[in-house]
Image (cartoon, rainbow, N blue to C red):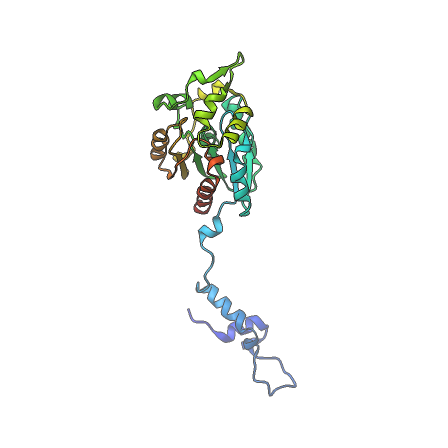
Length: 287
């Protein structure tokens, strides 16, 4: 395709063949095309693809992050991860679940998803992995990040997964109330769930527990968003609640990108740098 400079100049100046209007300064040799040369070169470059634009990945980085906590805790377990991501201009929202049933928890997280202003990542810790596996079917969810979490397939439950590869968490560590809710005994929380935390943090989390309903361990997953969407998994290699082998099995089945961290179950609190790094990598990878 040949460029007719006279035609281009005429279009830009509104004069036939690009001729300059009559002027008393006929000795000037510059023509309007010279005045417009930078614009002309840019336009031509755009036509022929000479201008390099940002890559699709750079344009598509996800900035909305929704963090979902586990059972018997609340969103405060995410504080250190939240601080790191918001410092890098991510919009981070921490969901708060009632823990009265998985259906109610799914509804609570879906409400948070519905008010996001664009595509997002869902990040789930522990039992929160079951919730994001369901809510992740939302079209605005671009990827899923599992942190020492259940990553169930359709028809699986948290309780069934634990039974398939038992850790040190056992029913005798629980106080179960008449309404079906339960609390974890302080000793069990310190030695099994909170291993890796400082003594001070472990005691605080144990004594600030949110009672959870036992039905959340019986809920059978209805849909598995990781089948259709990319996923990442941070495996706690010293986890005594959801065993590292079970985490690896679920991650491998899902084809997740895996990062292993040498610590216990409460990775959002013990290793916020590593957790935030994986979330950042996922946000930069999804479209």
